[in-house]
Length: 228
Image (cartoon, rainbow, N blue to C red; front, side, top):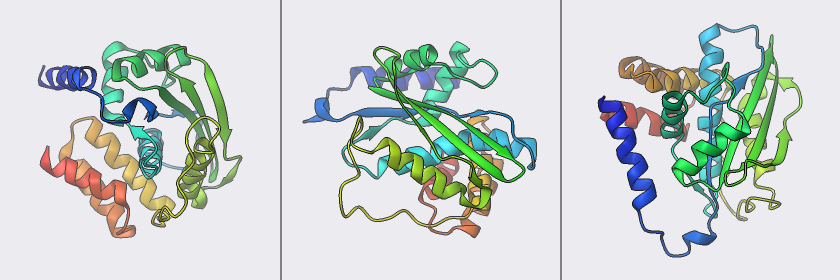
């Protein structure tokens, strides 16, 4: 009940808050949980975690662009779960549109990842939240798992190509380099936090930060888990 009340409060604030100056021209985007397209080689919970860790890390990459406004992934996940919008881990364009409209997003990103014993592919779809139209599909192609963090960054770069979303402003500092192991641990932390297991979330965030001390999304996640 408390979780539902908080979600309703968040939705009210999103819908009721007056627009900021210039906000009408600022694209608003939310990234949903990515579907596991059939992965092997890691613990099953690692893959469940990556389904949430990849979009959380992607959201952090998009947040680097001051020409975009991102919406909290965890709030979107609560809507997906509350309304039963996921079918076997997949959120289709129609369901994505429902989430986007409830959160006031102009765009929704959905995606799929496949890890076949260390060979990974990520595909993402940019969806118009007002119509459900898939505007763009981007992909990393198949690469080594060790490149996973860079693959997430590459997906963000492709989405911010300037075709639909504004390009990343020149001079924006590069993201901190992290390892694939840190990203896997980050995913486990995000999963635990989504499930309300704050102690496990804190532990996994700390493990991720031990491997990647400059992992900004993990630092923010740790602060959130410790303060909630």
